[in-house]
Image (tube, rainbow over all chains, first blue to last red; front, side, top):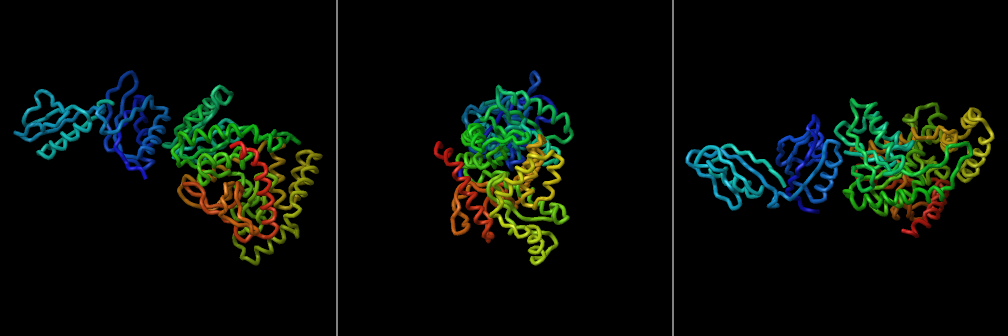
Length: 149
Length: 354
């Protein structure tokens, strides 16, 4: 049996009611849960939906072939979640006096000082490491979004 | 779960699509993929069929997708209804080898595409004739347990109905199976007939009354004689004559007459197909009859059967599993073995090319 891996799919779909339902139904009806789901900006009638999920390579192929057949979907791209080309950003709310944790490959936005909201950007794997470190340091709120593949 | 219908705009394919939606087998969140041929008339009509189905069933239609390339077939269950059929006209017939020559390439192309691009788990229901050839081609590419031909199930439903009519019952009160080759070479398994509400003795008496001492040894001759006789009658008289035939003969002759009347048998064929699809989709395992590729797992008349044959099997979400051909009567075993030989002979030229 093939081991499951983590994947990121960037789905470009029509900006209309039902697109997200159609996408999520493909996964839920096959018993595959999203690790995360985020929507990007809408441009010229279509928008991007980034999902991360865990599946074998064979199931990933079938899931995304099925997603690609949806009338609402214009384009699907997928990469392994640890691929450095998968870019992400995260916001963490750090406790007073705690500085953003330094993780290789992660840039903290200017103004991300000790305590308060801090914005990190980098590969998804590096950003996740930074978020984990921030949580360990007492961060209370985090949000991670996939920016692109 | 998603279903792809290859040959969606044909008589049977269109009916399968309609019944899948009408009977609400597919929920609105599932996808029905209509598959046609790029560049052909079916390519254009497939888009039209999609629009027509949505027009009719928008309130509860599933997602409907059009694919015109075998590589684009993506579904959990695939219905193979592509290819040509016998002419629907009085006396119209086409040799099964001609039909095989016409449809082999179509089925083989889809089989290769599914093997290359598929999930490795699709269940395939073969409707296209000769159904035995379709099963052989697809089973070789995809694995035999994932492929079932619906001909034996259609024959079974027809047989049950004729038995029910003779006993003054509705079809759902009758059990029993038809095996063998789809069409005139079928094998009605009288020994498997069950009648709801009758105990074993009562059932034996009822079946004996219906068979009137006939055995399957004369079945081929009776079919041929009935066909000759009906060709000389107008359609209304022919149907009246069919009503007077024994139940097992009626199971063969009535659909033959319906097809040659020009009405064809698309509705009944699609109904039986959708029955099988419902079974595959709902996760249960039930006993149906279907054409399957045997590999020696069953012994009939002292002979271990291999090759494609219609038989009662257990069908579930991953395809068929066990074959149930126990304790056949002597005339059933004899006809089934002869039938297996005829199928083997008809498939041999195609097996040699593979």
